[in-house]
Image 1 (cartoon, one colour):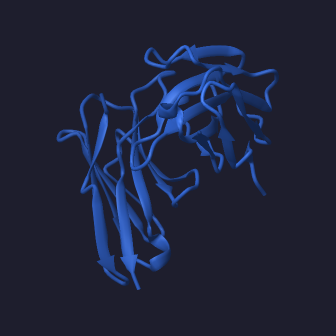
Image 2 (cartoon, chains in turn brown, blue):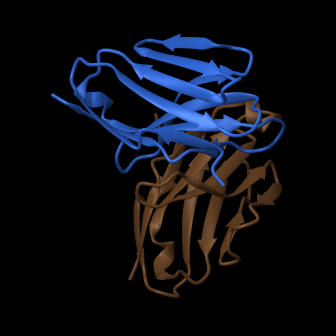
Image 3 (cartoon, helix red, strand yellow):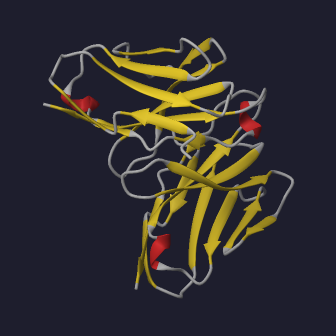
Length: 115
Length: 111
């Protein structure tokens, strides 16, 4: 059974048109992450939520925003997608009070294309 | 900058052979984790090794950690075509600092 679910699997948007990617989890984990992964590269952390506390990576563009309305759901909003934002977006979760000690559970990802 | 760097970037072997991937990192860690990613999918956790451990096994996987050299290796024995994937190491520095992923090794196992 899927534990971290990302919708949609494939998303096509137009240059400059806002887009929202969604992630839900059935694990009741405290922490949720959003990563951007481009072809043949490492996943790059954009931000993470520790419960309701939002933690933005220093080099995440302002164009990327996130919302976590409750424990189960987290959204990635790209306000004005550029061609360089085409990538796989991965959502992950982890449990517990100490992030470093816990493994991450990933969704299958959403592949975003920008036309 | 990347904390973990995998070596080699790509590896191609015949089914039945062993595959060894290496990961080097720069600073002291709490633990090191290995993940697998099939093409177009999310990452799947394989194994976690703590900084006070030197070796860990899980099925056909063997992970070693040398904190003095700041390096780890992942060995997959008796490889299968289904092992074809990218393998990433991720380092955990401690506290509430998120994992940092390396660039990965693309493994191709040819039947």
